[in-house]
Image (cartoon, rainbow, N blue to C red; front, side, top):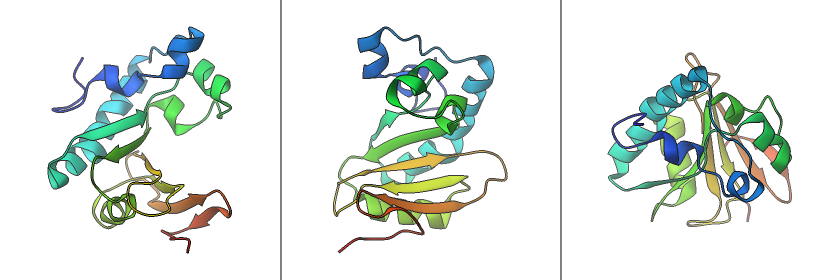
Length: 150
């Protein structure tokens, strides 16, 4: 099932943990609707801007999958509102900066970045989102804004 021009339901629900542990990661219709909005408002504009494939590492997570990986049942991933991803060949800080200045997101987190292609982007979308920007690092936890550790 296509969620948008370049993204399928299959790639947004794919999970190695779910496969390994036999966890059902099938979304409900409202989660699919949320993923469509996420793809149209976040992933498609990123794909169009950079003209490069996007590599989603984690999209939708069922409550059972959230529990299996130690995440909250109320995570935006469990609602189909969030995706963790990278764009091949694009510096993740630069990607986060572009998203923060351009797109209507709810929450944007630059996770575990230490230069270049390290780390990944967590981005969520809901209509009239908060526009919250954070950086997550091993040493300092969550910090407001986009922070590069030196």
